[in-house]
Length: 326
Image (tube, rainbow, N blue to C red; front, side):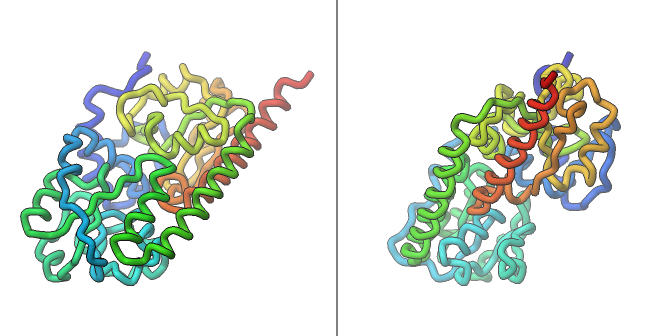
């Protein structure tokens, strides 16, 4: 029985991620379809770069004291965080899927998570290039540095990293006051949720980020941390890969009480899981679909995502209590 990530998951992840630019039709979880949807891009991209040496990002150029007036962002979440920090007007170039807020849709694109047009980057004359320290490849960082560009790595591994990321972008752009206000609101909202849900009854959760191959996330991914904040337990938290492929047999063996699916995974998660009624979550109707961007993208909207996850797990707990009543 497959209780671990499938062998060669990194290689399949890389191949799938490169094919993610075309949206595919939803397919049942039981069919061996080897394509991954664009909405899973940011989650799966991290597993593709997890093998990069940590020093590849740490060696990035130091931040200079002058405020950056022209900034290129190489990740959708960093683009959104720049707007939260009051530096949205400084972003002169970004990558595909940078669609929040609305103003970000009008910024010129210079590539995507895997390919960067360096000539276009140079033509934009940026004072700084924001890179995602867990998602921008070492090769891209080294090339940018080789071109003499000021590279600024931003870490967003955990929930608490988001506030510091906003502060750092604010310092970079000279919008520190706006950034500090936004960061404090975010921290206060997250702390309020932690306090509210600290003593909720634990429920076991399967997080689904793609249908076929069937992908989940381990305990180091932000979605798993949101589940934990709300009193849930990620059944695959123990796996080594950040975004591992798992078999349906492994999900059956874990028998989660709740299944949370991202909204671009399948149009109807309940229908796709309907045949697996021996899984507690399916039998009790605890299969839910949540907005991908709010729970998977490391931005200030994680507070919204956390609220939705917490409300959903409360609904699941109510169904679990009803199921055990005489």
